[in-house]
Length: 474
Ligand SMILES: [Zn+2]
Image (tube, rainbow, N blue to C red; front, top):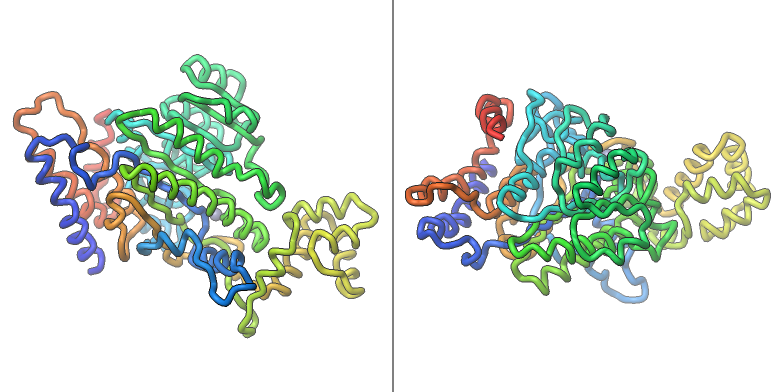
């Protein structure tokens, strides 16, 4: 029912575009249609993350709790469930497929439908219409979320295959980690195709034109808390915006705070807040860009919730973010350093910001003897107890996620929606495809835009024949 209401609302909001298209006006003359689309995904960033981040950033010396960029931009919520065959709890691949194509698929799918047939992505549609495209992420660039925007594969685990396919994505900007997945021959192919290939973050500043493939880590980029001044994601985002802005037709950019999810899987509140801060910086950078470029729409969401984090635990009405703020490095890094240092109790006390009593020293000592993983786990557990942070799973949960937006078309994202709606609304805002015979097309051309929004209400499996024929066309 809500779905229908939303569809009607979206339809009503889109009608002015259709009417103008009938008058054969160029889409660029429609003032409320954005030229540039930016979708930002906080991987695993369920509502508890943005709330926790607010208190983590709160200035304890003031009476009020200061708002964050997420509070400022909040417009709605989105359900994240995958195709029926995978139940109610999505993985990043199915969720990214939904966000990139507007269709639901099975967990593990990289922009293919439940029959493993390719689904056209917003990036492919944008390319066909003359826009530039780009991705900027903190994981390896061939990880599930960016992969669903740049590739098609039956499994997210086919990392090598996905990396090899990127040469055909024609994306103008690809920034993140993942050096180990790109062979010298593959990098040569990128160079031959006109890409600047970078492997050191310091090279990025000098880049002043597309195309660019920047791989700044063997796999993922370092935890943000281990290099608090690096701000790699906002730096990559700002560079991507500068480069993509050179196309007068516009662009579609996907930015992902990838490792919020990794911290969630590890039940690691220190890195969860560090990665949230990194992502928030990137969101603020884009918000600033939208302010100075009123023809740009930004939409921020999460693909799902990870870890089942709770602000408070064990029946105690409290949360102590000052404990988290005092930690000077990721638990993983602290554990590695403690393993290599005989004076580890002092090292941990300095890194954690509290003294170790005899009982805790004994517990850490036992953990240390069992290796880095066990010690890191003990450190995280101690931080959870002291900050009163809870977790319910090392995996994902099926709770709805938030949607944030600003810029022309932002009102389309108000209220309750599905993750596929987000993609279909964004796709509906792309310029209309150019047709060879222009005399009689305006009416049929105008119709598809509004109907794409209700169409995704029908799950992908019920329309496989339709989807297949659409895909086989190119
Ligand atoms: Zn995950």
